[in-house]
Image 1 (cartoon, rainbow, N blue to C red):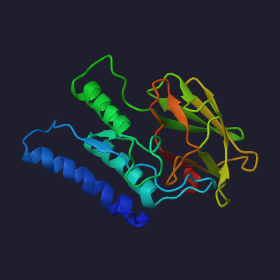
Image 2: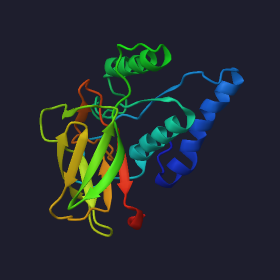
Image 3: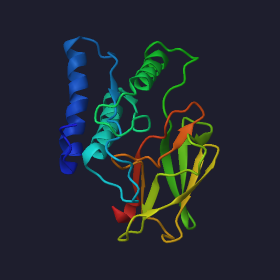
Length: 216
């Protein structure tokens, strides 16, 4: 959490973390040596304004996701189970998720559910966006409320909180003020308390960002 500069997260932190994993595997002469990366927790008070950020804890979380994918490491999300404390006391759930990753992917236990759901595809349809999520077959919210944590924007417009509708493993996102969204963010805040989508095992939907090709 000392590498919070937005411009440096992806340029340096992400490849450096992936390189660290590869190097340790080489040093131990085990190309399949498992590594689990625990994402940074929520920090500070819950964010209420629909304004995502790209640096800080968000930048590191996204960089950790990129490094895990590049190095074939496990990724354990924690933004949904902490109270904003820099050193959160909820260690049990973090340990349980880390154990689930190891049991499912290292020891190949078929009775252990892993990985967490993540957005795999975004399609612009009418006045909204349709998100396909995998590997979940059904999604819900951890608090029973409407799905939250999604914000959208036009190409040059302000960020607006979006309404999200869940059907199975598909999420439709719309905002009346943004009829043709060009940008989408989910859980891209220091303490994204509104981001409440989980799979039917309680694992959270991973943070996500999308930009339409024409808006990149």
